[in-house]
Length: 330
Ligand SMILES: CC(C)(COP(=O)(O)OP(=O)(O)OC[C@H]1O[C@@H](n2cnc3c(N)ncnc32)[C@H](O)[C@@H]1OP(=O)(O)O)[C@@H](O)C(=O)NCCC(=O)NCCS
Image (cartoon, rainbow, N blue to C red; front, side, top):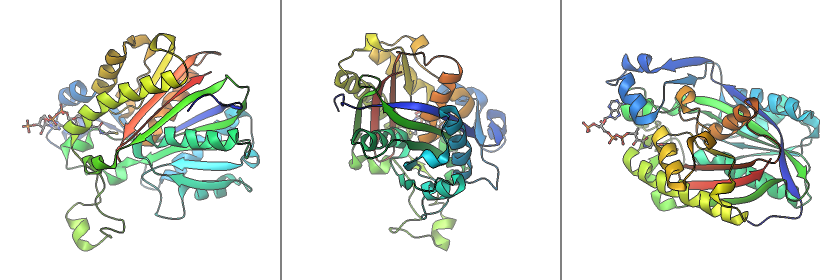
């Protein structure tokens, strides 16, 4: 997408994390694994897990309130709420509707968007279009997940990877040339079996059998996902940069989806980005799907890394398969 006449900027950011911490040492007691294996293969040390009574909309609400405060806006200013999630509180109503009620964001339209780990970047793109079309002024975009609820804690190939959290961004109009400069979205449904949740939908509704055979847990072909991720993250970043008329040398900060440190490192090397320009927090959180990028953005803001005028690139890949990247001038 080329630059539009109306710019769209992020006016406020917020984050929240699952209340409990699950360490590699805890996992050593649960499955046949080791702190050394997890750290060297993934870069993960700890992850946050939502308390039993906490659902995805609770995490989303905390992040949303912080983002609104940061933007100095009230819930009543919102025209639209989009929540990217694959772990909604329930099939319907959407998390976005639950959030709208909790925030008392009376006149905002609300819907969820499903694009797995790329969901936040897909949602930013959709939210930005509503603003650029002149239809809405303020759009709340949230990435929120409780992946622990769909993780099999007896499967060492997946349970070491995932955590729970939410991140939120408030979008508003900006002068042309500021904010989102370009955005690229992509998908390949032929890769649907590489990462998926087999049961609980219309194909295989919940039954005794689906529960007993663990079909309500994430299934993943880690090796294949890894290879695809390294290739697609580099490609989609290059496409988004070229859509903005920029090159890798222009990038001040690259915020990739945090799924595996080795994927981040390999992507940065492929692109020729030095480590100091790459944001990494996976050691503390693991993979929180749609929540990873908005949480990373909030932390980059807290660390003073989103200075005025900086070129910031966001890139993600996920189940579907899906991928996305966007380029921003802060
Ligand atoms: C899952 C992942 C960490 C596995 O790392 P890997 O280096 O590819 O490891 P492999 O799958 O080849 O497994 C190597 C060995 O380690 C074992 N292993 C897997 N998980 C383990 C764990 N937690 N602890 C110890 N050993 C483990 C495997 O069983 C295998 O043993 P075997 O050779 O005896 O069969 C890696 O493939 C990955 O991160 N993939 C991408 C996943 C992802 O990002 N998903 C979300 C996308 S949004």
